[in-house]
Amino acid sequence: MKNQHIYKERRERFFAELGDSAAIIPAAVSVTHHADCEYPFRQNSDFWYLTGFDEPDAVALFLPYRPKGERYVLFVLPKESAVEVWTGFRWGTYGAVNHFDADVAYSLGELSEKLLEYLEGSESIAFRIGKHPKIEHIVLNVWSELLDRSSRGGKVPIGLKSPCPALHQLRLRKDAWEIQRMKEAARISCKSHEIARRTTRPGMNEREIQAVLEKSFLEEGARGPAYGSIVAGGHNACILHYTANNDLLKDQELLLIDAGCSLDDYYNGDITRTFPINGKFTAEQKAIYEIVLAAQESAINSVLPGQNTEVVHLTAVKVLVEGLIDLGLLKGSPDSLIEQGLYRHLYMHRTGHWLGLDVHDVGAYRLGEYPIPLEPGMILTVEPGIYISDLLSVPEGQPSIEERWKGIGIRIEDDVLVTKTVPEVLTVDALKSIKDMER
Ligand code: GLY
Ligand code: MN
Ligand code: MN
Image (cartoon, rainbow, N blue to C red; front, side, top):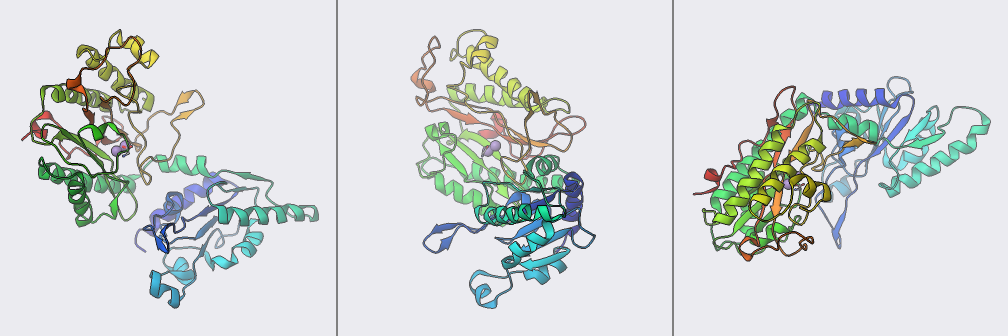
């Protein structure tokens, strides 16, 4: 397949991290939706990152201690016309070698037997337990058998460890190819948000806007939405993971859209925009919007090499809290409100997350006490918000909230690449100024 060299380079980097350990990385399995219907297949991101192979149930072995030509082994579903006529094309073992560059490939049925052979000579086994029940059963049985054999000589793996730290620190740092793909996901996501906003009118249903947005994802060549699109009118915007998307869009209310596309190779966009349904902010909506936008812009400016996600979060929180004090929605000094968390009934989530093959992408945020410093090539979202509802009670000593503020939920979210110098906002084509949100 095209771009196989990208996966090969990643495998080389992964081999270097593994040393003399074997790694076993399973693909995702098909998941039942109901009866005999399945959800659309979604590959496991770790497996995808190393293989570019988009079939369920496969298993990849990485064996850096084996001779050349036996280091990258794929176990795949065998070719079987009688099954493929129902569920579609499979590459089979021939395809795994000739199109996906496996050194050797076997049918899945041979996994136990071949594992016994291939794991001998490894120092330890890198396999994530608790996530792949079927494969875990096989791995543990094989390992047990190898431990039984150890008294008869030969080198057998003495430990089981997680492949995640090594693999996820690779995934956290995006190379030039990945950045290009993230820009494509951002382009499609931005374009779709623009179309959705321009389509929105009072009297429509949230799901009509969801349809417009997701139609655009598909028309532009994406696989579909990266996660359940959030199309939340009025007070629905105060529900952070609202996905019901089946309410009337009312005059004088806001619409919050949190949605992004996923590409065929699983790179994702994640954008939130909030705008007035009838094209004009009310005074209260505008006041809150201005604060969230200022918080977001300050936080984006702090996305610099050597800074960290805590700095980004605190930068946003400071602007939000100061703005809410000015509006009389919080009372006290900004520092003590922040220290005591007395703003959390209005802003209850973090300001962002890593973004990549997973929407909430892998990679540590802290190492023990120390936040991970930002480096060029890391991509994160910056997404502050303010949510004013009765869902969380006002902390003692803080002002009760007047009715005119209630039901306002605003979040603004962009995808930001850390560079050597200033941050690069990948989603800059989704407009967000007050002027652009009005018509
Ligand atoms: N859409 C999920 C998030 O913004 O984190
Ligand atoms: Mn996000
Ligand atoms: Mn989002």
